Image 1 (cartoon, helix red, strand yellow):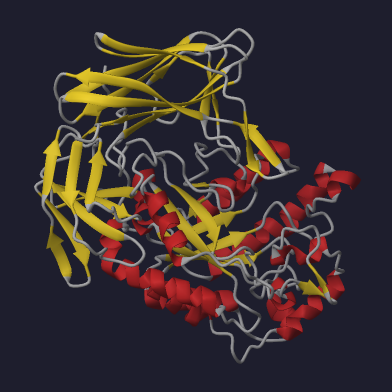
Image 2 (cartoon, helix red, strand yellow; image 1 turned 90 degrees about the vertical axis):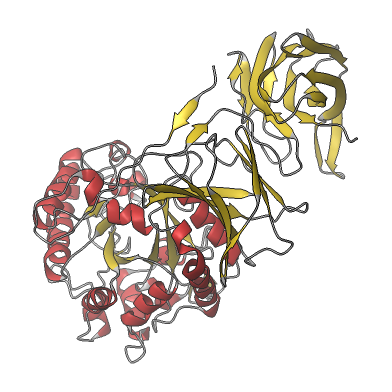
Length: 598
C-alpha cells in the first residue's frame, strides 16, 4: 500500500518577555525555528595564541585553536599572559553584530566561557576573566548585548559547564587518569558554574538561549543529573523563555531541553519534528587559527544551511575573531555572499521547514516549504542546473497553481506539467544565481505527499537503491559507502526487495542491474512487475584495482536484465528476488529503469 502523507501546518505567534511566564514549548521555540540561521563566535584567550605556542603548533593533530592550553600543556599563569595581546582600541563587538545582520543571521551565540575557564566578562566569581587579565574596564558581553538589542539580533551564551581547565576541581580529560571525587567536582559546580550562570542570566538583559557543550550523555561523565536539573531550574526561574540545548548532557526529549544540538559539523540526515540545529565551522578551527587554510566555499555553506532547513533544522555558523576583534577576510567574504543570497532568497529559508519526503532523494538539490496566506509555498533549491533544462520533482501529488524562478529582477513565471506525483518544470538556459537558484511552487492547500516512491533522476530514469527501497527481507543488510564500495545491500540467503515506482507513460522500459557476486558460484535473480518478470544468473564478479599498487576492492558489475512492459502510466511495485551462491553473499547496488531511446 502506498504511503500518502498529508503535511499539516500550524502558525503560532510567540512573544518573549524577560521574567514573563514560560510560554508553551512550540511558541517558545518559534523564533528559533523561524530564524534558521545564526552566528557562533569562538573568542577568548586562545584567540591571541592563534594556534601557536612558543613556536610550536597545536599538538595532536586536530588544529582546534581553542584547545591550545590543554593540548600544548600551558600553565595557567603563562596562558593568562595572552590577555596582554588583546588590542582594545580595535575591539568592537558591534561590528560582529553588523556582520551577522549583513549575512542574514538572526541570532548570535558567543563563548562566554570556554573550556579554558576564562570568563569574557568581569565576573565577580573568578578573577580569571578577560577584563581582569587584560587590565581593561571593558565588558565585551555587555557591549555585545547592547549591540544585539540595538540591531534586533537575538543573543545566546555558550558556557562550558562540564569542562573547566582553570578551577582545581573542574573537569579536564586528564582526570580520566587521575580521578576526581564527586564532592570535589560539586565544589566546582557550586563555586563557579551556578554563580557565573546567575551573573549571565541577571546582568545582560534578555538571553535567548544557553548553548552548553557536553557532547556525551551526562551518565558517561562526572556530571550528575541533580547538577543539570539545578542549572535548568536556575534558567527557568530567571529567564523562563531562554532556550536550552541538548548538549547540556540530557536527551533531546528531556523536559529540560528546548532544542537538539547535533555534533560539531554534523548535519541532518532525516526530517526531524522537534527543533534542532547544527553548529558548524566556516573553516576548520573554531577559535582563530593563524595557519588556517581549510575555508569552506560559499556554495558549501549555503547548501549546509538549506539542507538543514529542508529537514526542519537550523544552522549556526561559527567565526573566530582575532585578539583585535577582526574576522579574517575569507570569513567576511563568505558571510557577505550568503547575506546577498538571503536578501534575494530569504523567503525560502526564514520560517520554513521541509517536506516529509525521503531526505536527499532529488539529485538536483533540496526542498523547503511554508504556509503564506493560506497557500503552501514549496521552494526548490537547485544546486545543479539540469543540462536539458527540465527540473524533475517527485513525490508531491497535489498540482501547483504556478511555478516561478526567483531572480534579481523579481519572480519569473515558468511552464510546468504534472503527471501523477511527477512535476516537470521548464527552466531557462541560465541559472538565476551563481550559488543556488530557487524555484517556488504555489499550491492552493496543504500538499499531499507520497513519501515512499522512487524519485525521478535528473537523467530521466529511476534508480532503485538501498536508500529508497520500500520493503526488504530482514536478511538483507545495509552496508554504507566506505570510500571504496557504494552503499549496498548484502544478501547471504534468499530474499526479496521491492520499490514503489511511478511510471510516467506506458511502454517498454530497460532494466539494468549493478551488483557484486562474492560467491564462486552463479547467483539466480529475477525482477518482477505485475505478471511479467526477467531472470538471470549472475556470474562471480571478482576484484577491481581502485588505485594502482595500493587499493583493491570488490567489483560491482553492470548487466542488462532486459525489458519489462508497463501497460500504462501509474504506480507499480517492482520486486527483486535473489538466491546467492552457496559460498558467498550477493551485494545489491541498484536497478536502473529507463525508457529506451526511440
